[in-house]
Image 1 (cartoon, rainbow, N blue to C red):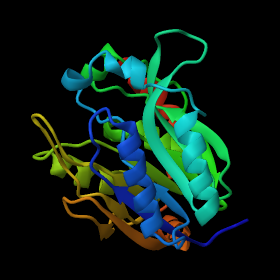
Image 2: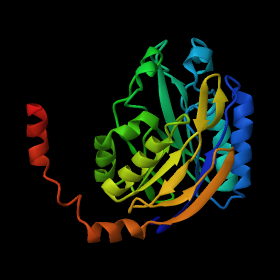
Image 3: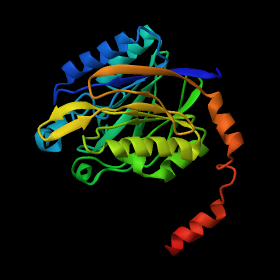
Image 4: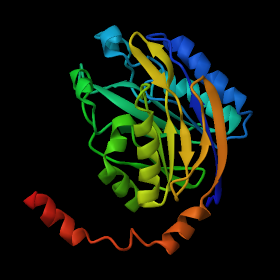
Amino acid sequence: MNMTELTIAIGQMDSKIMDKEYNLQIAEALLEQTGGKADVICYPELFTTGYNFDLIGDAFYELAETIPGPTVERLAKKARSYGTAVIGTIVEKDENLEGVLYDTTFVINEKGEYIGKYRKAHLYPTEHQYFRSGSDFPVFEICGVKTGIAICYDHAFGEMFRVLALKGAQVIFIPSVIPKNFEYLLDLRTRARAQDNQIFTVAVNRVGSEADFVYCGNSKIVNPRGDVICEAGDKEEVVSAKIDLGEIARERKQEMSLRSRRPELYGTLAQQA
């Protein structure tokens, strides 16, 4: 399948801390709101558990699950029912290494099939206490569209987005938990990463609060020019937009930045830095 358009839904949600059942019900309800009209829906980072490390602490080990596992299996049924791909980020426990956790995004395609996962590569300093870093930047195919994932702090690292773009990613989803007063980072980086690589980026952020964490929402879809084409507010809601993938080729024809790269210089200069 070679899609020229893709309808993307952002499931901007609040998460009740450590209440996986409640949070999954909300996620399912947001998917139901799309009425099967979206090709893909994405939820914020750690949407099933909440994020606050001070409040959750060692309970992360009890809340963690394998991927695939119960959450993937449950949402796969919904994906199959609506014909909508599902992208979600949860606490993953390593099935082979006891006590090892990851901040991981799973991908379920539009047929309700689990097709892979991405483990967060760039951990925010406080996250090292519980999570181990991933070491791969996979690209997934959803509805014939090549898709990449970057989780929250990952969006600070332009190198990662360039790698994904060179691997063919046309859309990169960014599930996040960005607090109020940092809206400028969400906006700036989502737009910059899109324009840098002439791709679509989709920031999917949380709302609500956990103790002193108050999340800003402001999820958005950005086109290859860096223009915001769809944006949420600071409440729990679904926002969606249909994107024209032909914009990627048109922008790259106008400014051939990927073709103008000089990778033979970058490694040498990086070694000298």
